Image 1 (cartoon, one colour):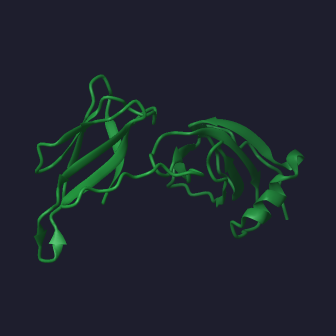
Image 2: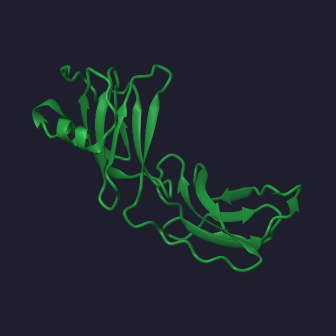
Image 3: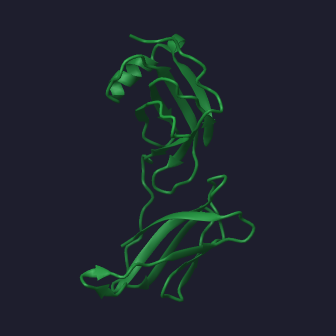
Amino acid sequence: MLAPLGPVWSADSELILRDAQTGFGLRGEVVVRELAVPMAPVADVIDGLLAERERSRTRWVDQRLALSIDAPLALRAEVAGYRTLHTVLRPDEQVRGRTLMLQPEVPEPVPEPVPGRLRVSGWVHDVETLAPLADARVRVSGSEVQAVSDAGGRFDLDVPAPVIVDHQPEPLTISVRADGSRMAAGRCAGR
């Protein structure tokens, strides 16, 4: 049924916890247990297995965690303010890292759009640290409108609605520039 748990905490691979809405890195706890047989990732089954603390391993995650996956692992990720994530991770020699996207219990509100305009909202973060990036300048192609991200990395832009060609909106390009940052990345949505 269940195999003994080998050395799951190693530098073979990397597990990253991120906010599914903003893309920011998260700090939380993961509990894992090796599985000898395949199983569906069902929350109650995983919680039942992980309740046996002597056969499970718990680790605090500061956004990233070295994790070796030599056999299927039942995993539960918990971060304060986020919905608990239950899954099974399977070995794959071609995968060197995994990112778990956790849903906030209370999503960030999205401002209402301005009529005749496209609302582009999102968050900017440092690519290495996954931390919010303040004072990043965000611009959408074809518009002179610019936004600056706040202390939480949040930005909102109202730009002219894209031109429709052959029943499709023209694509927009979003550029982000941040002084002193190795690189900026963002997640955004238009309405």
